[in-house]
Structure formats: structure tokens, C-alpha cells
Length: 165
Image (cartoon, rainbow, N blue to C red):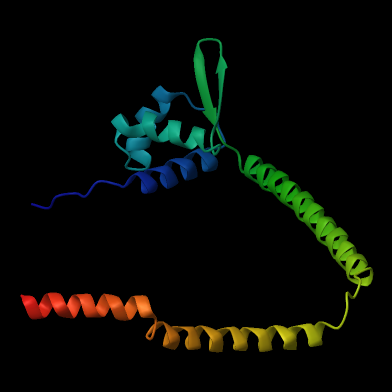
């Protein structure tokens, strides 16, 4: 006896959307709950949940007519949505390009008006020399601290304590 594996939520969504798109008709929840188990293999208890998910994602449209909630999705709706998304992204892309162009023009303008405040290479060389001299002086200071009278007195105190102990 073989056990049937249930459909995942994504498979249910795909099958339901394909069915609604192919039917090119208006459906109520009750009609879908009766039809989908036979046509698509979707359990009737999960039809409403899957339908709400498709509606939330904008893949299925919904409207109340009288006392009935009608659901539909037409292939042309998908094309219209894609075209709208394309125009929005194109406009955003064009705006970003204009901003980049304006910023590059401003950069060239600022580069041209940049004032040289002296000999940069000379200043960099002097900075390097001073940094090197600073490290040498720090090393020399470390050597001289070994002969500092307070450090020597401290060492003598420690050695006296060690000898007495």
C-alpha cells in the first residue's frame, strides 16, 4: 500500500495560479474548493489559505460583487504589472544616471578649482623623515629608562625584599 505525499505550499500556489490563469474565468471560493481537488490535486481545506496568499502577492485579483467574493487572474494582468514595474525601474535607473552625471561634473569642477597649498611631495618626504626620527627617539627613550634612578631604586628595593625573605 503506497502512501501519497502531500503537495508543498509552493506547488499548490503554482498549480492554483496556473488553473486560474488557464480558465480565464471568475471563481468563488466555494467553486474553487469543489474544482481544484479534482483538477489540480489540491486538498479543499487548503484552497482558501493558498488563495489568500496569491491575493496578498498580487497574483490573483479579488472583488466583491453583491454577496459573492470573486477571484480571477488573466494573463494580460501579469503583462500589465510587468510593464508597470519595468517603467518604474527604468525611471529610477534614469534618475540614478542623472545623479551620477551631476556628481561627476561636480567632481571635475572641484578637482579643477583645487588649490595647491605648497609642495606636496616635499611635505610627504618631511613627514616620513619626522616619523622615522620619532621612532628612533622612542627607542632611545626606552633604552634610557633602563638607567632611570627611580627604576634602579625600585629594583634595589625589590632585591632587598627578596634577600630578606
